[in-house]
Image 1 (tube, rainbow, N blue to C red):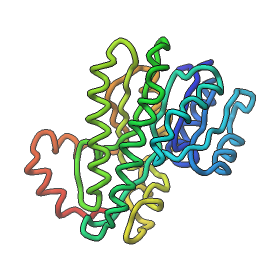
Image 2 (spheres, rainbow, N blue to C red; image 1 turned 135 degrees about the horizontal axis):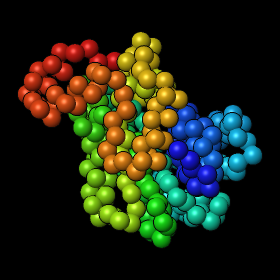
Image 3 (cartoon, rainbow, N blue to C red; image 1 turned 180 degrees about the horizontal axis):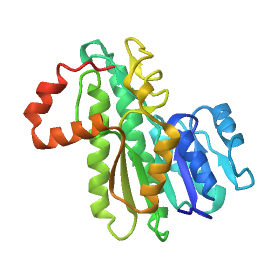
Image 4 (cartoon, rainbow, N blue to C red; image 1 turned 60 degrees about the vertical axis):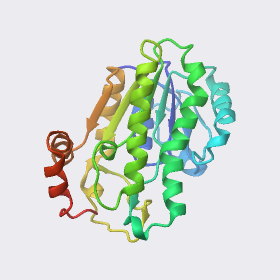
Amino acid sequence: MNFTDKVVWITGASSGIGEAMAKAFNAQGARLILSARNTEALKRVQASFKEPNISSVILPLDIQQYRQMPSIAAKALEAFGKIDILINNAGISQRSLAIETDFEDDLRIIEIDLIGTIALSKAILPHLMTQKDAQIVVISSVMGKINTKYRTSYAAAKHGVVGYFESLRLELEGQVHICNIMPGFIATNIVKNAVSNSYNPDNQNAAGMPSDVFAQKALKAIYQRRKNVFIGGFKEKFALILKRVSPRMFDSVIKNMKVV
C-alpha cells in the first residue's frame, strides 16, 4: 500500500477519523490538504505527522457554507496543482429525539452531512474527471443503511449521502472511482460534538474501534478501489444484515434497544 505523490484532500481533518486518516496517508507518502473549521487543531494534526518533510497544507473550511465550495475547491487546486483523492469526512451526528430537536438543528445536520458534501464534490468533480485514477471517498455511516432512535436527521442525511454517491458511481464509471466507507462505532468525539439533549460518556462510540485501526482499514479499501465498505464491529455488521434480510425483525429488535 503506497500513496506516494498522491494529493489527498481530507475534510473534517482536525480530529477523530479525519485526523487518523491524515496521519495514515502521511505515513504512506501522500501530500495532504487538511480542511476543517478549527485551524489550530489542523496545525496540531500537521505537527504530529510521522513524515513531516512530506508537503501538507491547511485550508480552512466550513462545510455548512456550501455556496462557497467552488472558491474553496479553486484554492485547494492552487496548493499542488492537482487532487487525486477527495475524502468527504466532515460531519456532525445526533443524539436527540425528533420531537425534542429544533428544526434549525435538523437543517444544520442535513446541510453539513449531505448538502455540503455534495456541493464540495461537485465543485472539484470537473478536475477529478481530468485525472487518471481519481477517487471520491465518502465516510458515510452504517446509518446510511439502517435506522435507530435519536438519529432521525442524521439517518436522513446519511441515507441521502449513500444514495447520491452510489448513483454518482454509475454516472462516473471508468472516469472517477467512488468509494463509500460506512463506519460503525469508532472511538472518536463524534458523540460529544453531536446535536444532543445530553452527553453520555459511556456511549457505544467510546468503546468502539480505535480511530487509527479504522484508518488503516480505510486506506486499504481506498488503495484496493473498493466500492462499498463496512468498517466496524459485529453488532453493527449484524444490524446491516438483519435490516437487509428481515426489516420487520430489525425494527422489532432495534426499537427496544438502548441507544446512546
